[in-house]
Length: 364
Image 1 (cartoon, rainbow, N blue to C red):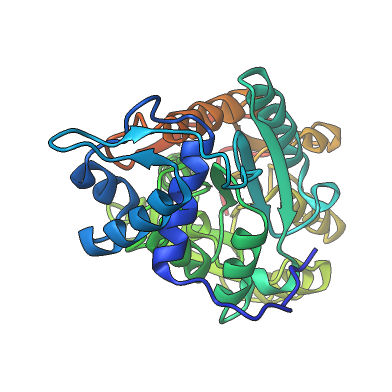
Image 2 (cartoon, rainbow, N blue to C red):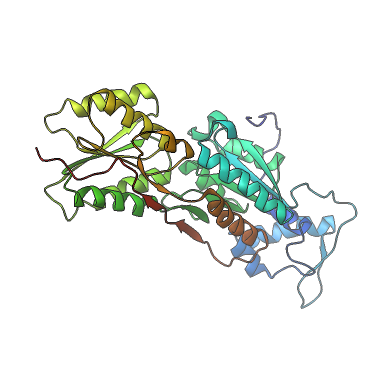
C-alpha cells in the first residue's frame, strides 16, 4: 500500500536523528545511560552538531538528564508519548507476500516467527509502484515517519532506495546484496560465486556457448550474478558467454529464446537466474524438440519448491529458507541492540543440486 502524500512538514535530518534516538530509548536499547556523543554519531552516521541538536530536542522531552562530567542518565519521560516503534521490525517489500516467489514467502514467515520468539513484531509494508521510481525518497520519508520501527529490513531494493536508507540515521538491514557505494548491513546468497561455479561446471562438461538469462531488474544480486558468470570465462578464451536480459514475462523470454536458437552457433547451456523463468526456458526448449540434457543443458541459480514438479529435474542451487531467516533475524537483533560496531555483510553459499538437466555436451 502506497503511503499517503498528504503531509505539510518534511522532517529534517535533526528530526530524523531525534526520532531514531527516541525509538531506541523507548526500546530500552541502552539501559540506564546514553552512550557518548562520539559513539552515537558513529552509530547513526551523522555529525556531532546534528547529533547535539537532536539530543537537545530529547532533553526538552525529558528522556535523560545531564550530569557534569558524566554520561547522560536515561529517564522515562512522563509527558513525551511513547512511539510505537519499540520492538517493531518493518520489512519493506516491493510486492505483497502472496506475489513473491515461494522461497521469499517462506523465509519471511520464518523471520516473523524468529523475531516473535525474541519479543519483536514483524510489520510488512508494500512499496508498490514507487519501489523502482526515479525519486522514491519522498515516499520513504513519509513512510518511515508515519510508521516508525526499531529496525527496517529492505527486500533487496533499488540503488536509490538503498542510498536513502544508507544516508539516513535509521537502522536498516538488507535482505539482498547492497549496491556499489552503499553502506548497509546485508544478508544474501552468494550469487557471484554461485554463477561462477555454474559456468565452471558447464565449461568442465565441454559446453562452449553458454547463456546467462537474467531478469532486467535493479537487484544488486543479479548484477553480481552476471559478474561471476563472466569471471569463469577468463581462463577459457575459446568459449563464448552470452548475457540475455528479459523483463520476466513469458512473451519476452520466448522472444529471447527464438533469437538465440536462430543463430548460427546455437547455445548448448542455459544458466537462468530465477526459478519461474527457468521452468519456462526448459519447457520451451522441449517444445522446440530439444532434448534436456542431451541436446541442451539447463541450470537455475535459485531454488524453489515447485521445481521438484518439473521433469527432467532442473539442476539448481539451494539454501534452506529457515536458515536464511535465522541469519537475517540474528543480524537484525544485533543491530537493534546496538551491539554491532561495524557494518556486517553475510553471504550464504547455496548447495548445488545436480538434478537431471546438466550433462556432458553431445559431440557435433
